[in-house]
Image (cartoon, rainbow, N blue to C red; front, side):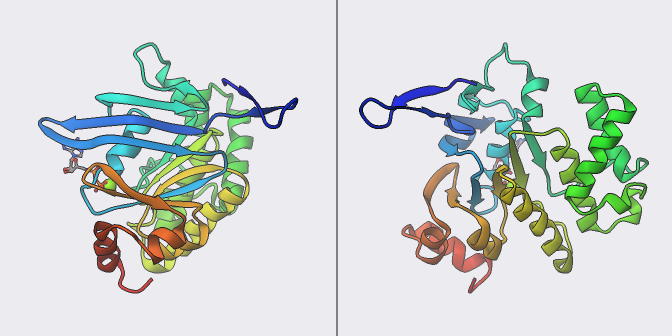
Length: 262
Ligand code: ADP
Ligand code: MG
């Protein structure tokens, strides 16, 4: 990690860590369709940033570019000051620093909850079975599912499956976690448990970039809300600023559409 030394007051130096996640001038087109038109976004250590925006505005593409599931056309992604973009970057190592949780849980159906978590530890981190099991159980404990370690995904509710997927990411001890609509596929009564796990992760100091339409959660838990439309960040601020008194008409129109009064 690159550290910057700046003088806080005359005669005194203070170590300032770079932003945990920095997106600089990110552009991405699919064919002739520009989907990201120059995104700049910083997420500080332990910060939870929410991304709101209409369907098709580029939210998923932004997240996918952050761990290079999509290859950006231009711009840079930095994790703690280290460039993730560039041909010489060891993608597997960098991806360990960025956990990603999707709307679909993507669990292996034939593996137990613990098996799903330990697979990544053994494959990506090269751990022995024993090491992976103890770390995997710890991660399942963090999401409240240690007692379901031996259950198959089909024996778990959607909310529990999503929590296993979160544990699978957490076990790799990422620097930042990206969530793409993590509760959108869940029955309403199961959403709360997943949000509770995310809130818990935040209180433990995890840095998180979250795409979600859970406005109440955004208002309660997010440090900052970013509104995207047509591949650009239109507006950002505290949840109160953006959700309660949006400045831009496009934000206002979106908010009145999503859930009525929030
Ligand atoms: P959001 O997550 O905000 O709904 P997306 O990032 O998924 O938006 O998509 C933004 C735009 O990019 C949409 O018009 C979508 O159809 C298009 N798009 C996304 N992924 C691809 C792809 N792999 N190939 C072609 N077009 C894509
Ligand atoms: Mg999306």
